[in-house]
Image (tube, rainbow, N blue to C red):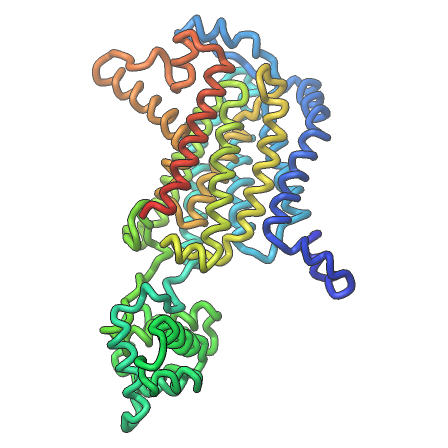
Length: 493
């Protein structure tokens, strides 16, 4: 709302331009969400107490743990609603709602929050810790992941490479010679048409020969000319590219109609035409990036999934939302670790939304991801605001309402930034917590013995004698180290 207002009033008040910057709006969204939590948090907690929406402590086979946590009985739960509401209000004020990625991220966040709310509500109605059945909860998580995965297959958020950069050139000498030869080449051809589309100053430079100029200057001019061709709407002529129909991606773009293609689609089409005309000088680019997984630590290495990508998204969303849910067992633990992980992905969203940074770091370029930086800012503020009341001794618990919503938000950020395989590192602490449960259950079923005193992992350390605050703070430190490690992989390729 305030973003649109700033755009409307900019012609009259120039200083309002500052509110169109992503960095400014992300900061404002974080402060707004945090302030809303502080302002309305005490009232929400009192309302939950009045409605007797309190936590029930289950007495299981570990009596020592029950003794440690029995004092938490009756503490208001479903506090995750505070996170959801403050985030959405902050985004309503500072978000650019013409950006579809903001809609997608908010939808998954809200949908999984609704699943968690239903689970919490049933627990409170029954007055014990059994809410939705495992199948019903899983069905809700699968539905959220499937909707996201299918949408991204039908409406990709990224396209393969368009503009030509120095690293895309296989041979500068061959490229210069091939292009300059077109000045005197007879008859029409694909190369001749590319030459004719280059600016006059570039043609003059190439016609003079490279010996009279610095190599760096000549190369920059060549790239300028090639990229000028990419912006043309009339580069393609069927008789000059007779084999275009044999290239699946190129044929698909042509079938849509050049005039109806969006700008990114037209740029991609012309890039493919350049590659077809100059196969020995310009490297072939990766097709279908929207259904491929970039592998952290490796340059331009992708794992193609095709339509299985939608299934992968389901697995990712289900896994991370359950992992956050399992981690939510100590005061401030899940909220604090979520804040660290979300802040990391917000930074990644800003990086991949910039063509220069993403290209330099060999990351998939997602131009619309800039608004996810604002989304991450709102989540950060809401998480910190909730943590204000959730710190030990907790005045409120987030419940499944918050843990599933935060897990869904984290998974969606991983998918929408095209850094899916980085999630196990960014959210490494959540992975350890979930893995401890899998190991414990598997070991007990196969051998009848337990690896840990209790799973998830934070309870194991509690039973070893660590205080709750010590477990939480040390796990926060581990989460921060994982986050720093993940940012390091962006450069180490």
